[in-house]
Image: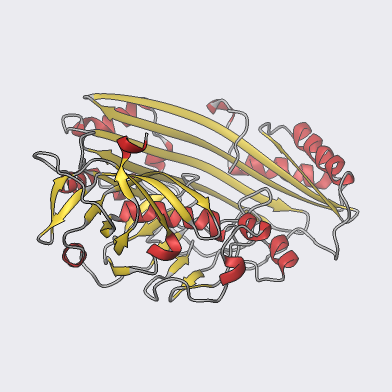
Length: 451
């Protein structure tokens, strides 16, 4: 989601104050229909490195205004929350609409009156109160542990109101943790996310990173395709990329998504089931999208078959498909609460199935350069040889190029223990994925050779 002007912490408002200002602006709007999405948040990041802890806080406010006037649509964004600025944003959106052609049919802002799901634990006062002093106190017990620890957190207030009676608002927090043991080949890395600090279990994430860390001399990379086991965190990187380039509304609308040719066609292994479920407390649940539509579970991939892109109400009407309650603001929709459904294989099972191959602990800089085949290129970190069904020597960081259509159709197994990571926006949702074993990964080469 785009963000605008940084906002001093002292200027942040309570939900009641936000509601009052939006209601006033809606009453004064001259547009046929008006929608206002108000999002303000405080983002924090603390890094523990070399026994030092550094913290950065970033307050932000984004207000998105959309109007339908004379069958034309216009929008405007601002970072200022005064009533006069809201009214000016409405006028700017109307002015933009005048430069556009009328839309076919009579498209309205959504008017969903479905009750939102009851979700407990959206707001954690401990996260909301975090500041540099409290963050340092939280991380101090781990300052002697080797490696780097990155703690991310967000406290946000969100309101979605429109002139057709939608009134959705929520206060929400989220926290995420990433730990890297060292920078050497085969370095252990691990991640976790939660809506409250008590469930983040810093000690457990450290233990997982240590267990994956390679000691001893560096090994040599064998040539040719070979089986690969992806850690849950690495699997999340691939699913996130697949979600963005294939299942987002904009990729489907513009025709770059492979779903244009393969909707309701089995293209993945039948064990692949990718669900978006913002009602599941096992993830980072959230009750509505940024059109105010109540969230509900949606199957994106069912038994290897892609079922639907993410769509807001207007995009669904234009494409003749069913809306999925995935509006993220602007002209896009995206699933933010992903679950790759676990299989029945333990990590030991996957390592035995991929014996002689590689373990990849983390993927950085995942990019898709051919969307029609989901052809990706990524930096593979924390790479280790699998020998005798166990993690062995560390290997150099790699460049991995492959097609996810091919890789996800060529599985050895899906793990049974998922890990939860933050979604790309850092607070509206998360991505829960288990480990994944792929029968053969093509084009693996040392990163240093590729530079």
